[in-house]
Structures are given as structure tokens and as C-alpha cells.
Amino acid sequence: MSKAVTAALRGTRAQEDYLEQILTLIEDKGYARVVDIARNLGIAQASVTGMIQRMDTDGLVTYEKYRGVILTQAGEDIARAIVRRHESLAEFFALFGLDEKSIYDDIEGIEHHMSQPILATIQALTGELERQPALLERVKKKMAGSG
Amino acid sequence: MSKAVTAALRGTRAQEDYLEQILTLIEDKGYARVVDIARNLGIAQASVTGMIQRMDTDGLVTYEKYRGVILTQAGEDIARAIVRRHESLAEFFALFGLDEKSIYDDIEGIEHHMSQPILATIQALTGELERQPALLERVKKKMAGSG
DNA sequence: ATAATAATATAGTCTAGACTAACTTTAATT
DNA sequence: AATTAAAGTTAGTCTAGACTATATTATTAT
Image 1 (cartoon, chains in turn orange, yellow, green, purple):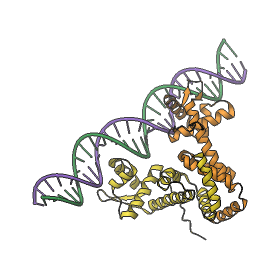
Image 2 (image 1 turned 60 degrees about the vertical axis):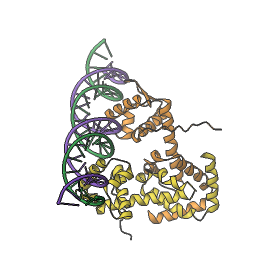
Image 3 (image 1 turned 180 degrees about the vertical axis):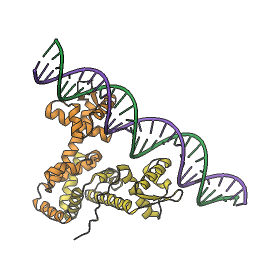
């Protein structure tokens, strides 16, 4: 019996974007600064400060003035779920030779709307298709015609 | 040379939901009333009136007080693009035996974030997988384990 | 240690998009 | 035709989430 890891926790769309970004920064550099979050999300620093304060209130991050942000367990759970969805999608669409540079942008937004059944389908299908190079080639050919 | 039918027109997320709903109502019953839009989207009538007025200003619908709403060409283009995306997704995930009743809800939201490459991939892949019953069966089995 | 710079925070404003309550218009019933 | 019910509108409020301008704190360089 696997534990119920998939808590049904969800932030707002915007909060999920922040959480995803914060987790990425922490894993990459060890900490998440307001200035980096702002740059990566393309919004103003002051907006980030405001949002972080709201997310602290909501129990998604722990925030201390001038001392940076860390994720609460709840926040980290959501962040990991989002990252997992984004990565699953990227891995899936990479099968079809989509431009590596643009895949991430093309997917952007979908990860916030992936139900568990959809995620499970994508993951299972990815595993199968990896063993079907001929099929993948045919799909790529078709796509060339509709691009 | 095919004409550039895929205009890059986009409304906001909320506007796309309204447009999708209005088009569906018009095709189903011949007209779109505020009360039906409100019920189907689960929001208050007054909110619908307000949004429709904004969408008239934005050139997405034509609105006359007390006389209902019709789509402009721009609005219809967006609506059809959204419906097409939603249907393509539904058709795709139906391949894997997901519960017909819940597919539509599971997909909800994704259609607003589907870039052209993603759409083309899904459509091409759907065509191929229809001819791969054995592969589809294997995917279904895998999913049973992760659901 | 102080001055300059970078990072962060606060205050106040704006827009989208929802709400409720109250009013008006249209449609249906008698 | 008058009344009632249903549909639609208006007015005013609220929240999320962005913005700019200004202030404060931390950090770096001298």
C-alpha cells in the first residue's frame, strides 16, 4: 500500500508558478531571493514581496523580512507536484522531436490543469512510446504537414 | 498553400471560457442567453452581463441590451479554436478508456494553454494510436497501477 | 567605519473578474 | 390589459495580483 503522497493541495495558478520557481531556485542555488524570482517570472520585485507575504499567510512559505523565503511542507508538496507534471509533459513531447528550446514555453500553463488521470496517462504512454521508434517517426512526419 | 486560418487571436482565460460557452449555446439552441451562460459557467448573472459588455468593447461579441449576444468574427474564431482544442484532447484521452463522464472536467483548463505544436502533436498521435489497439491495452494496464 | 550599491519592503494605485442587492425590461398568465 | 414571473441590467463592493515610486536594510568597496 503506497502512502497518500498526492495531497489534493492546490494554490492559485499564480501561487503555483511562484512555488515552482522557488523550488527550482532552492535546488539550483540553495536559496531563493526575491530578485531572482522576479526576474524569472518576469514581474516586478515589489509584486513578489507582496505575493510572498500572502503565501506566508496561506502557509505555503515561511517568510522573514530581508531574510529570504523557504517552503513549508505544504508549499513543497505543491511545488513538487507541479514540477513533476511539467517534467512529465516535457519528456512526453520531447519524444516527437519538438524543438527543445521551445518545449518548455509551449507547455507552460498546462501543468496547472493536469488532473491525476491525465498525468497517469501521459506517463504510461511515454513509457510505451519510447519503445516505438517507427510510430514516433510517422507522427513526426504527420506533424511536418500541419506545422 | 493553405490560408492562415489560425489567427493568433486570444482573449483572456475567462473570456475564452465565455466564448466557448456562447458558441456551444448558439449551436445547440440557436441563441445564447445570459441566464444560460451564467448557469453553465457557474457564475452570477450580473457577472455575465458585466463580462459581455467588456467583450463587446473588446470586439469579441456584439451586445445589445436585453437582446442577447452574438459572436463577432474574431470572437467566433477564438471560440472555434478553443472548442477544437478541447475536442482534440477529449478524443485523445478517450483512447485510453478514461471515464467518459469525467474526461471533459479532467481536461478543463488545458485547452487554454495549447500551443500550435502541442495541438498538432496530439492530433497526429491520435491518428496513429487508433491503429495500435495492443499498445493502447498496455497503456491502460499501466494506468490501472498508478490510479 | 563610512559611503555607495544592491536587495527588499511599504504605500498607494490599477484592472480583471467575481459578488450581492436593487431596479428595469420582457414574456407569460390570467 | 393587468399582473406576475423570469430575464437582464446597474450600482457598488471585494479580492487577487500586478504596477510605480519611495523608503529601508544589507552588503560591498573604499
